[in-house]
Amino acid sequence: MARLRAPGGCPWDREQTFDTIKRYTLEETYEVLEAIDNKDWKELTGELGDLLLQVLFYAEMAQEQGSFTIDDVLDALSNKLIHRHPHVFGDVKADDSSTVLKNWEALKAEEKRKSLQNSGEELQTKPELLLDGVSSKMPALQEAHKISSKAAHVGFDWPTVQGLFEKLSEETHELQEHIQKIPPAHSLAEKPRLPDKLKEHVEDEVGDLFFVLVNIARYLSVDPESALRKTNRKFRRRFSWLEEQLRQRGRTLEQATLDEMEALWQQAKTLEGVQK
Image 1 (cartoon, rainbow, N blue to C red):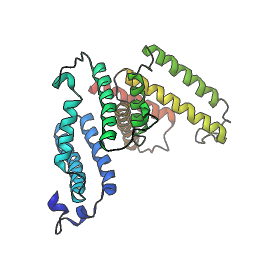
Image 2 (cartoon, rainbow, N blue to C red):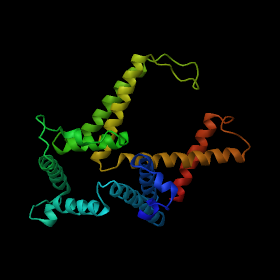
Image 3 (cartoon, rainbow, N blue to C red):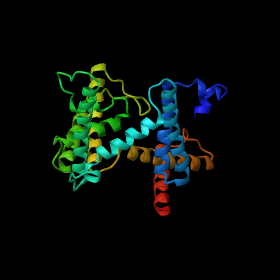
Image 4 (cartoon, rainbow, N blue to C red):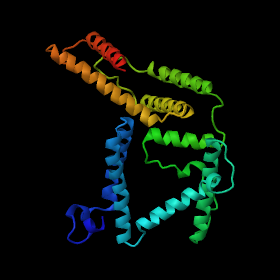
């Protein structure tokens, strides 16, 4: 990596900055996730290497400007793993993962407090709020999962999953009430035009619905981002099969009726079930 960035190295690598590399880091992360979802271990080997390259890239650029080195990154990681696992490397007792996560959050807060003291910064007169540490730049489903998890760790959670389904029913009903106020469209192809105020209410209710679904996923230990990606791929697969069947009949999607497409969709589902 140092050679690629050095004079006489790769022109493209030499031109990159922290900002220009960010998007590649995101792309490589999603490719790792896709390889895992596909259980393609050979592909995962290469994708993990590509993701590791991003770490090396940032570390090399940081070393060039005198900020830190790859050794600093690895030392920080090693120290963090030891410090945040006192039930493994120390004498703290943690019998379940819930206790581990609570200890983890407490240790993170203590680390931040000490870091501020060591850097000479005065502690804020107003303490950091629980959700301040959750990045708002991550995908919305992931952010919802993270902030609801943090709230749950301090006891702000539904006691049973049934309460979540009751909340889901409540939010669905509220959305339906707003939808009834939407002027009817002249055809299925025409999307309803919502007044600005009503659109704002509908957007709020749809967001509330998503948030409850994320909490159900969290309660069931399901990653909502992965679950939705799998559903997206399933839809792609079935719809592409449907489209191919129509092509074989000399028809296009535009020429097919809804009933015809629905029948093919059900066939696609049946075929998947047989193959499994």
